[in-house]
Amino acid sequence: MKNEEVARLLREMGDLLELQGENGFKVVAYRRAARSVESMKTDLEEVSRQGGLESIPGVGKAIAAKIDEYLKTGKIESRERLFRETPPGMAEMLSISGLGPKTVSMLHQKLGVSTIAELEAAAREHRVRRLPRMGPTSEKNILRGIERWKKRSERIPLGVALPIAEEILGRLQKVTGIENLSLAGSLRRGMETVGDIDILATSSSPEAAIRAFVELPRVEEVLMKGATKASVIVDETVQVDLRIVDHRSFGTVIQYFTGSKEHNVKLRSLALSKGYSLSEYSLTRVADGEELFFGREEDLYRHLGMEWIPPEIREDRGEVEAALSGRLPRLVEVSDIRGDLHVHTDWSDGLHTMEEMVSTAQGFGYEYMAFCDHSHGLAIANGLAAERLFEKMELIAGLNDQVEGFSILVGTEVEIRADGRLDYPNEVLEGCDVVVASVHSSYHQREREMTNRIISAMESEHVDIIGHPTGRKIGEREAYEVDLERVLEAAARTGTAMEINAHPSRLDLNDRWSRRAKELGVKLAINTDAHSTCGLSAMEYGVKTARRGWLEKGDVLNAFGLRELLSHLGRG
Image 1: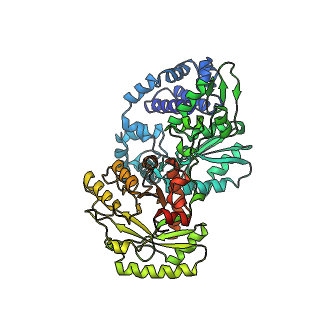
Image 2: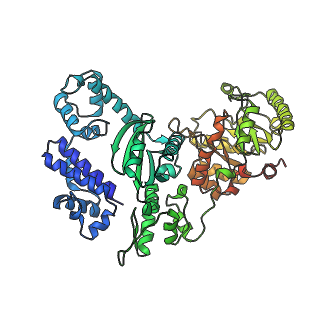
Image 3: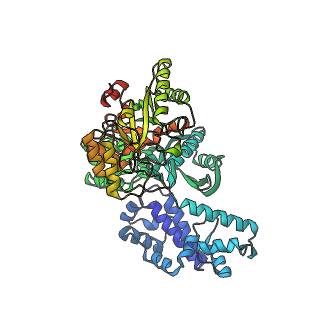
């Protein structure tokens, strides 16, 4: 669906023309055409095929020709020329909240400002406040807008975006007349980072729904407010978009805005092969132009001859072919998880006691939990010497006698030293129910050294799981150099499980490598690595990553019941 793309391009052209001091009527014409295209409920490409572009309100012959050019070639030459003629930094300055073409043009003419960096310097040197209709407040707002722009250019971690989205959804659910509330975009697909938060809904009173949205307590700035769409900023930098759509088209609209682009291209191609043209609003029979509307995604997929495809795997990685042949996996769900096999307590660097962690885990309906405090080599994390670990084992035995319907497993997160040796000798490890082996130091080893280091740890008969296998922290630390293909092949050979660390800053292994592990027959454990009772709730992020990796219940170690788990670990 090109409607929004074309509307954005037309709006851009209007802004660039205004920057260059073009005739005001021409500027207004482009913006009016952009609004009309954006509000259309029919596919612009279909309108073009029928020769109806000039029938769109505000779209005359010249603009229609430019739209047709874009639909046929993917670009508008006059737009490209406008960009070439405009200093690049000035066009970028339009992305600063509160700065329109007139203000940017004035700043350029009066202060010689042509880039965001130059604008920031001018504001910090208090040169902006000396301009007409500007002042200290304007200067402050510009600096705040620049800071937001800098942060907004970074993608938002799943663990930040999802709680914000869920709170907003919860508030909107209480608004009379709003129905079919749903996340869309990369957040619905469970990607580890997202650009912004997209929400779709239907409503019998769209304008009231939009008004309720922009007036939510968390909203700090309203970027755009229309009859059926609004964009706001929350938490300083997070953009949230709400679209109100027709109930009868909700199925096709949510499918389109969920993506991914690659999945949508594949679906459109499939539809064409079956004699249909698929847009965000309907499925149109090419032969006679009859439009079919779907209020539910499931009905759209079914009409195309396939199973409904879970959002997490819509990446054009074989899911369409699997859905057509009835071979989609039954993806693991949070309700399948029976316990957590990597949890820390106040014995090392955790915040809460074992009793407090157990109580919280029971609230999740878990059957078991493995306390895997750090080994003594990680002194910075108050790692346990062997004597303390033995003391802890005795305490766990006593707790197990007191707790009904729940099993506490003796575990450790043992450090894999730089030479591949483990931090505890075999006689200590053999007393544990669960051994998670992890790398926390010497991250800068070469790929061969790091790979051999991890494989050496897996050769130990006592190591059950490799924790956070690449060591990455999203947005903070890159993965260390490691040949994961070799590691996974060794895991398949030794029967070692790989961890999907559910902490939202890790999500390690990622989706692609988790799927590769599954292909090789390697089991995975979705663990929270929780250091507090609150940390246990991170399980949902790990499950989303597992689902993106096509994992099923049988692929996940901690989806096993206790008896099956212990048998698999050789402790049964």
